[in-house]
Length: 357
Image (cartoon, rainbow, N blue to C red; front, side, top):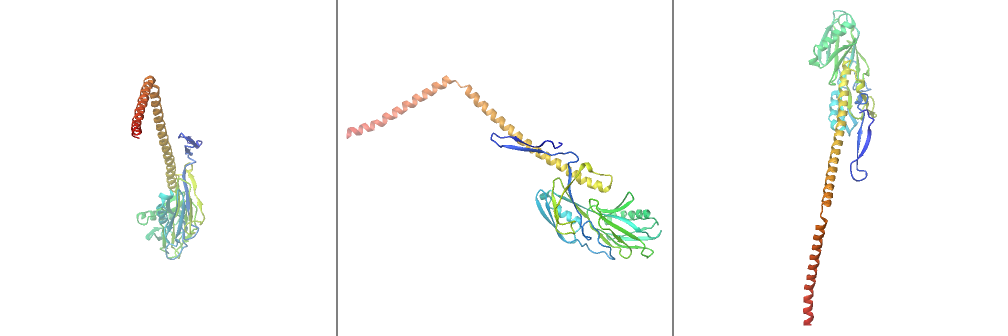
């Protein structure tokens, strides 16, 4: 199980080169996991990024394109213009049976109040079209806590969850749907409050941050896409808004040994890693089962051959040669007598014809 077995051939037939190959790879924690590719755009309006802050919310600027995936088999999927990461993941998953590659999407962004409203002022904003507000406390940590509570109070409506870990506020949608902010205002009517929005990819890579204020309080954060497989694969996007580049990117193994469940993101990633590690082990078990069936069939066949040979040998050894020789001699005499009688019968017509002549 540590991979030292490697690959070996076993003779299973009576002729040369009738062999079967058996391979066993390591199932150590540092050797199994999920082969992954993280698709995060380099374009400001692409996947895993946030659009520039504007006064009013704009539609998604993600360009249409394709993903070429080379896994167990090759497949190409088409992504429509304006699609979300959730849509892209669904398209990739539609060819999983061919490629062996699955996709998951998640939208995540760090939030930080870089300028605060005065204490007791009401700060309001729209999150995915839902109007929310909180009362400023006059401190950054207090305001961010109030902001998180305002977001989580309506999660069922807008689909976004806010968390604070180690003093850092972030929002996420675990399906990969876009997260939109709009109409950031405070009750004083002065351009005081500012909110920095920093998108994050699956690997924690930060996208380009945007700053929202009362003059330009709208942005759209697109999710990132992560591809997973128990086997090595490569992926290529046709447009920069779909991934960082348009060249083939080969998957990288994230192994079980490095799983980190001390954070929400790490726990989510651990699920994909462990799922694909189990799939890898299942695949090896299936291969071993097939080999075992082949060996069982070969053993059964050899046992039948041995039984038939033994039976033939026994019949030969048990033969009464005196009786069989006498029977053979009798049959030979009868055959010779019959041949002689037929010969004489053939001569009689010839004799009669010669007398007539």
